Length: 371
Image (cartoon, rainbow, N blue to C red):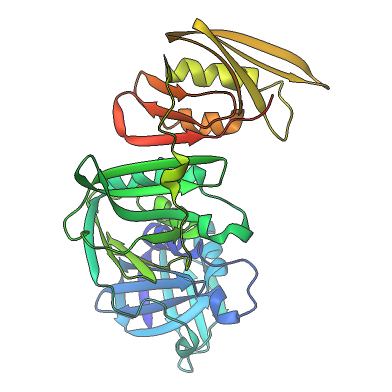
C-alpha cells in the first residue's frame, strides 16, 4: 500500500473516526484504524465492537492495500503537521510497519493484521428510510439531553425511536428520559418507516452521529433491524448495535389533567433561571417558582451562599408554588427557539409539561422538586 493525500482531507476523516476508539483498550486491534487504499480512495474504519464508523476520502493511490495503524497516534501526527502539507503513507513488504512522510518529517508506525479487525457492519437491515439532515439534527438536539447516564437502567441510556400516531397521523417519534425529565420529538413518518421496530439508539452512537451530521446537507439514509442501525451520508457510514431492552411506557408519564397554563418568553425565563440558580445548592440546583396571577417569582437559597429572587411577567392567571432542578429547566428552555413557551401545571407534586408555542413537534415533561 502506497498513497499520498492532502493533510486537511486526512485530518478531517481521522477526526471523525478516531473518537470512537477508547483510550484504554484491552484488545490491541481496537486501538487501530483499518485503512484500505484502492481506486483513488482511502477508506478508514474504527470500532469499539458496539459502534463502527467508516469514511472514504479521495487520495492518490500508487499501490492498493490494507493495514491497521494506531488511530490516536496517527491522528496526533497528522494534526501536528503544518497546514497545506501533503502526507505520504507507505506499508512495508511484510505489512508490519507503515511509514508516514511529510516534508522532512518521517514516522514509522507498527501495524497489526487486518484479519484481526472486527466488523460489526454485516447483517440484514430490512427497514430503510431517509431523514433530511436538518430534521435529524433537530431530533437529536431536542431529546439527547434527557438521556439517562445510570448504567443500572441501561435501557434509558439512549433515544427510543419508533413509529407512533398523533391525532390520527402517523409519525416518527423520538423519546428520551432519565426518570426526572422526558423529551419527546416527532416528525411525519418517512417513507419506508411503516412497520419499523421500536429501537433504542445508544448514547455513544447518538453523540458520534450528532458530530458527524453537523455539516451534512443531504438526507441521511437510515437502515435498521431489531439489533442494529446504520446511518449513511457523505462517504460516511456509522453502524451501531442497539440497546437490547424494553423502553418503559413513557405515555403514562405525560400528564393529561394539568389545567394551569402559563405562557412566558423562553429567553427571559431562561436568563432569570440562570441568574437565580447561581445561589442554589450544588447538588439539587433547586429553584422555586411562585405564580401569582400575571407575575412569576423565581427564588433560590443556600445555607452557604444566601438567597436570590427575580420577578418575571407572564401570561396567565394562576396561583401555584413549585420547585424544579434549575439545570433541567435550562436544558429544556435552551431547546425552545420560538418567542413563547407554555408551562402546563397541576400542583406542586405533579409533573409539568413545557412546550414551544410555535413548534408542536417537541414536548417536555419535568418532575418537580420539594423546596
